[in-house]
Length: 311
Length: 311
Image (tube, rainbow over the protein chains, first blue to last red):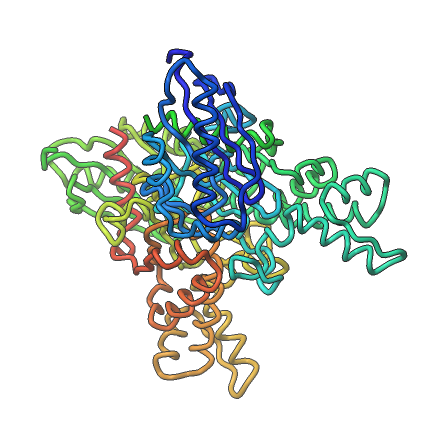
């Protein structure tokens, strides 16, 4: 592939909207960053994406882009390019977003779930490059997931596959935004880690409010037993969900990313122990748990890869 | 494919050992049935398989078979043809069974997990023919499973994928033979249905011991409230496990087979209700729950299909 060939890629999150021009080696030729107009009308979100795309095209003067890959924090139908359900950007629900953006830019545009895009990014250029079958788990505000099976992103029948965050780990547990109860998202997300640490500290000594998993990490690093316990508890719940995945999918690798992956040293042994205690021995012994390598670039790089593959 | 072409296929279970000659249309040209020499030495099990195979070859006089597909109730590595772990036939653990049988018959031989074979059989000739992505669940002594993803059997990295029976539905629940606790196998297998009904009846009125899920079905059909409740409870647990699968795999279809599928009318509404209450709306609304069509022939037909595909 000629080096001057490139695609546009976007990562449309609840907070940030990033659009980039990315070449076939995964290099950023240009990156446009803005805040997502969260409470705004659909047209403003569309305009934000189009504006970022035009900025990238203007910056890369060699040639026009080949395609546009849009990663978004939503259930999406990749075949039709339609947003099915978007809790963080509810105004996009039902929108044929790929067609709308594609028409405005006169450019072939494909839609991808952001966690699946991140899985593709890590498989292309990150930690799971060598793995034929891998599971990507992202621990952020929620718990997202993406699957690479037989070397390809597995999206399921409508593109909604990989919702690992909604594996049930406490059947009568906390209500979840998805409508169920006790999803692993409620016990192992960055949000959950801060909540668990806050709950533990309220029971003994001086109550403390942890706002983020980073607060808990800092406190755990200083030796605070409640914060250390919060990561232990979170690791056990995550390990239970991963045991289900090991039994069902027999992956070579599980890659863990997202902001709360920063607490790796405090939780990984508990994840591993619970997974080994619960999953079949053979696939549990063989699966490798690794940290994601690409950070917040995984999604946009995966979107770029999906765009290249769509050509 | 010429009609005179055929393969050998075997279903090696804990109780029965069946070997058949199967043509490319899925017709049985000959079927040999025997009891599995369960407590016997490895050599007797191997001899039983070889004997059944030779009986089939002798019965079909037109031409030699093209390959041999062996479905077995065990974790298997399909690539190497090795039995990894076989709770019901522990003497086979670690055995290079495909090579051993293949050498004795001078015939290319492939190994397959029995539930994955049944999934292949149902996808080839049964209820999930039209589905690109489907999950097969079998409710027998245990709960087995097989996955068809993107039209192909998904076996995972070592061939151990699809162990749906060991999705956790009660984290601190009953110990399971796999080493974990609270696996859906302990709450939704035929064995579990009989146990749950027995437990319910022991609490009120005249205690009754249910030996099989068929006993519970007969009793439920006669209006016995404990038996009806046993199917309700079992359905709820199965629905929870299927919700996890719907969120992770977004299948078009979930096919339910095995002996306890006979209780379909008593459990399916509870399975469906729990699945809908827990899984994401879009993939839960789209997935269809159906009964398996091929009965106990699913595994041997799937093994035949795997043998044809290996040529």
